[in-house]
Length: 99
Image (tube, rainbow, N blue to C red; front, side, top):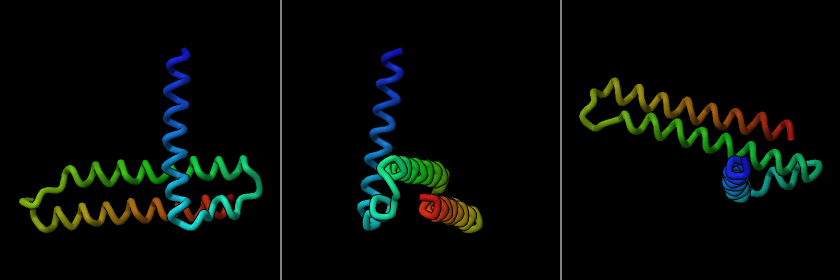
């Protein structure tokens, strides 16, 4: 049981670090505009989670893309990547409005 809690804590810390780095590159928007430290911590972890999900989805799409594929299939992969980017930006926009 302790090993599961340690693993969960490590994952939350890593996601928090990813969220903090992304918040730092966006000008500390979450830390400046949050009402208290709990909402700031939640926002940082949510931001890191959204970012990691986007990275995983784009990586999955890129693995299927090959230079030998037809132009239609490569264009479809590009459209999928752009949709993932739009989903991540939209999720971050609504998250910033909540916090």
